[in-house]
Image 1 (cartoon, rainbow, N blue to C red):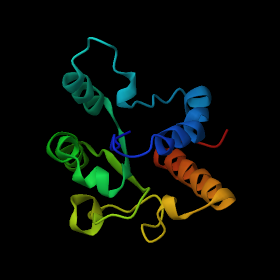
Image 2: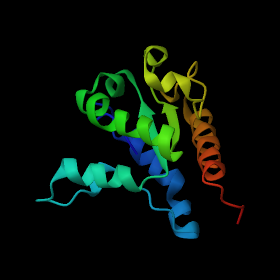
Image 3: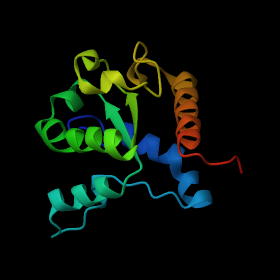
Image 4: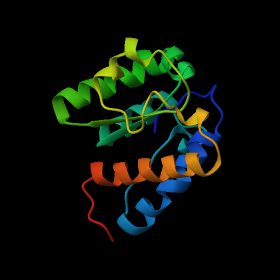
Length: 145
């Protein structure tokens, strides 16, 4: 999962909560940079995770699109892997952004970019996260349990 550190961690935490059953029931490894151990070389650790990934989940906001590290390191690797290895680019609009001017615009979003998650409240946001989790489940090609 790729996200901007400037964004509220609630987006990542909520998504992980909605995806926890993928790990428990299907053994899907869900990785984000908070799993990097103290003392580890963080850039190399992120690159190894990208090399293993079949699906790149992007939590897109203007902060995401403004991140030098994401734009210069993570995103080019993901786009190359999507082109050559069939990696799925699974992006989620969490806040309004200029995504149309970015390379991710060529990929279908997991939720309507016209209604980013930040504009949803309460049960409407919960339903959106459930729908996103189901779409990721399908993208991984997993059969219903």
